Length: 141
Image (cartoon, rainbow, N blue to C red; front, side, top):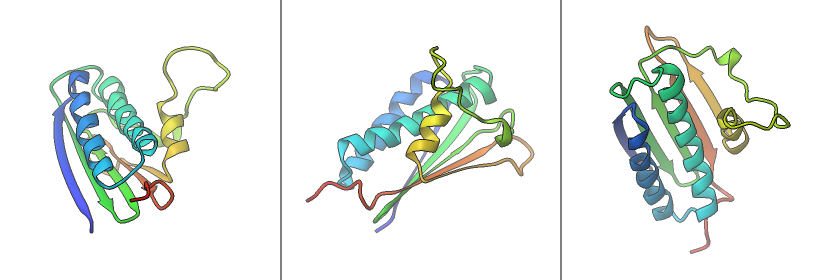
């Protein structure tokens, strides 16, 4: 059975804990392992952090719309902003051998998720869609 949840939060990092808690609850309710849940939460958290930092340039009161969809064996997150559009051709993680803080969010998203796509065919903002197949991530009941 598919389940969907939609959240809209302000673009202030203090609200990211709400997103993490809601997603954690949903994933564990669906019998996802704690480790797998934490990996998916990391991807969503990084995506929202990037919106705050790059799309909204730190402005704390603009909307971030997040929807999670869980089906029997798949997870999908759609994250929408209305700020500066990203150029998906330029989104690249920093080299892993360069030791410094930051710059690995897109690396984690592309390594953990099975599909990551950016839609900018709108007047403003970006819609990020990330999908993960959960067939091997569920705990035994």
